Length: 171
Image (tube, rainbow, N blue to C red; front, side, top):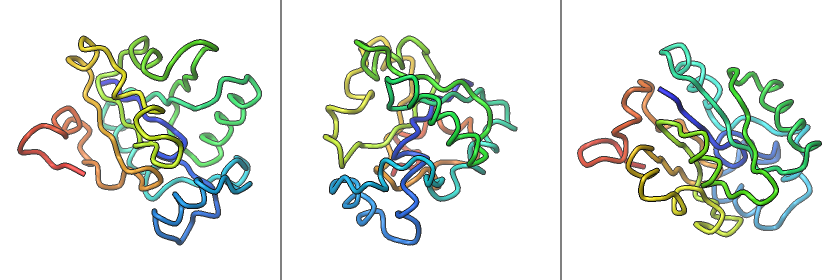
């Protein structure tokens, strides 16, 4: 199973967000505090590192989707994931004229996990609402609250395929 996880706001956040509520973290992002952009001080959200290692040990092929288009920012994003101990996986970024949805469709994971982009424009900034009907039919999309983490997602990676289907756990 191929799982793609968005990075910023989904599994990593500003270090200043540690020990405070998700709502306060979102407020920090809305205020565009300098710490929101200080990747050297980013931290993992909740138990994201362990969850992703667990999925990988179960056989999942992980990839990541970062927000940057600039080469220097792409390198910083890779460094953040390594520094925080996330499992190996390809880190994808948008090309200059590409949308997040186009990246997701190009990579074609079985599962996409992203956040709701509450502090930066909501659905307009997400991949899920902009996927083609064909992509929606083959990719399970899971949207978590921005800066809330992925802790509530199943430990069994196979359950992700049906996570938003009737009868399964929902966020």
